[in-house]
Image 1 (cartoon, rainbow, N blue to C red):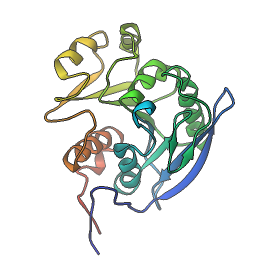
Image 2: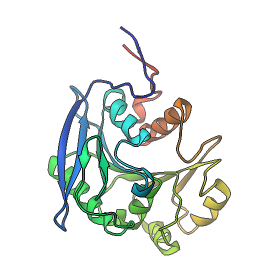
Image 3: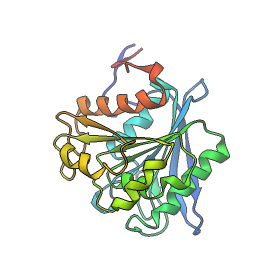
Image 4: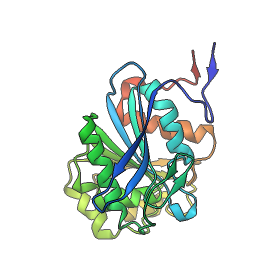
Length: 237
């Protein structure tokens, strides 16, 4: 049977509900999705959009990455709810930390990756998740970071500039029609770290709604984590 890959189609994977424990004593709801039979070639750690505006571990790009990429690209996907966030998977303990206390949530996720021996970790942040990644990602062992629709609301110029001497590969996807940061301004705001690759996405919007934009984002992720898996198919046998 042939299945068209779009929307919330769930492809085969080993999926495990897991608990992340933060250094300040909280339990975070999380899910690890692994390739069904192969060992993962890389690991995506997903940081979701702003909790106070509906962001959670099931925000659509993150959910679709977990539903598709283990099968299509042999990528492990770890997604979780930041502190105080509720999703169909459950509620993480604590309260919204305005992008500051969430540094402990990122640390808990990276500790889990290390404990499980998951290979080649990349942090993929979306909107608010990019702020946490930029502010605190330098404290962790990473192969790279992918920033989806970075608003740069909570990230200072100094925090952006601090990445200029980093060996970590950082890629920012800038939607042409973003609500907060468009390509021309992004070029200025990221100029302090010229090693950050800016990918301007024609017709892109902050929320990446629609299968065309979803496919573009997932393809950009796979291009960095496992380029041999490209192009991503649009049907599953």
